[in-house]
Amino acid sequence: MNYDIAVVKGDGIGPEVVTEAIKVLDKIGEKYGHTFHYNYVLAGGAAIDATGKCLPTDTVDICKGSHAVLLGAVGGPKWDDLPGDERPERALLGLRKALGLFANLRPAMVFDELADASPLKAEIIDGGLDIVVVRELTGGIYFGEKGTKKTDMGPAAYDIEQYSEGEVKRIAAVAFDMAMKRNKKVTSVDKANVLESSRLWRRVVAEVGKNYPEVELENLYVDNAAMQLVRNPKQFDVLVTSNIFGDILSDEASQITGSIGMLPSASLATGNFGMYEPVHGSAPDIAGQNLANPIATILSVAMMLRYTFELSQEADDIEEAVKKFLAAGYRTPDICAGKESIGTKETGDKIASLI
Ligand code: NAD
Image (cartoon, rainbow, N blue to C red; front, top):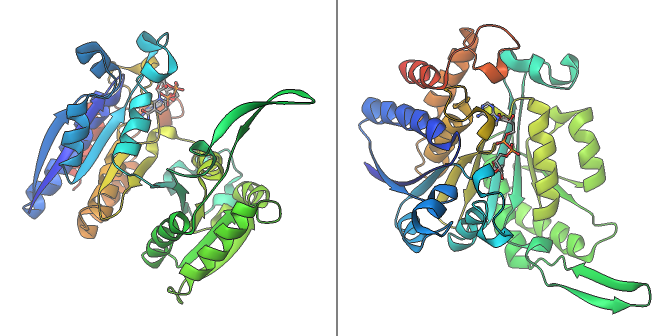
């Protein structure tokens, strides 16, 4: 099979980590007889330097014409003084909107070998951790009506949280589909004791859940969910929640793992289209020094194989290779705890060789 992938290398360590992920993808192609075509496009700071715009129209068109998008990271001090809507990071919002990416998937995994990196006590994450936060990405308060008005307490500002049944249905379906491929449990997070939008959310999630009788559905208020995530994260399989709650809980979940260089993410549209990127940013402090951990981007490519191309065996191969890499004692500087480490390129080479 032939697969078209739009590639945004981006800024800072973006190009370095993307190069290693492509190395690994090519190894998969070689092993299984797939051909991956890469359409390199500009977004972020590199696009501003080349074209004056953080998200050129060509980039959007080429992304839309591809099966999936692989993105490194964008931004850096060079562009920090630009106004908000001209900054490199604005390209991410533009891409999400233009590509209709409504579901953000963030797995939080603690590999046994890296349990020491977690800020949680060993007994809490003993035996590893594997949860995924499914966050609604294009609705809710971040996109609702906003404005300012006068009140008798002085000028005020407001942002409206609103969800339609259709928006909740499609994100709930993503979460239940995912749970079917995992441990068959969905935890829906809301604030239904206070918010009308949360009551609609809870009702619609339950309706969608009726189509998945094998999946256990549990509802939690967001304050309780935040607490349970550090108290007993292993009780969770798939967490599904709104844009703003997901923003906060996915960062909390990723901190549990203790290593930002290991965390992949996917943002999905209807159909199988998706954009795949590491959770971390462009890390200007270590850019260009062969110090970046490319594993988050390598695992993002595994998610691309699993969710967009439906190549589970190939995705498993990459995840297994990462586990073998860690089990053999290899570490990048961010996860070496002061011990011996290897560079970005060597990590990509080693993981590719383990496939
Ligand atoms: P960051 O994630 O880039 O870096 C935070 C810290 O983690 C740094 O010390 C960095 O060296 C380290 N780190 C990050 N990724 C690493 C990796 N793969 N290997 C080893 N160490 C790694 O966050 P930041 O410093 O807040 O932001 C830097 C720039 O990135 C900013 O311009 C920010 O706007 C941008 N940013 C972009 C994205 C994105 O493109 N999706 C996300 C977050 C931040």
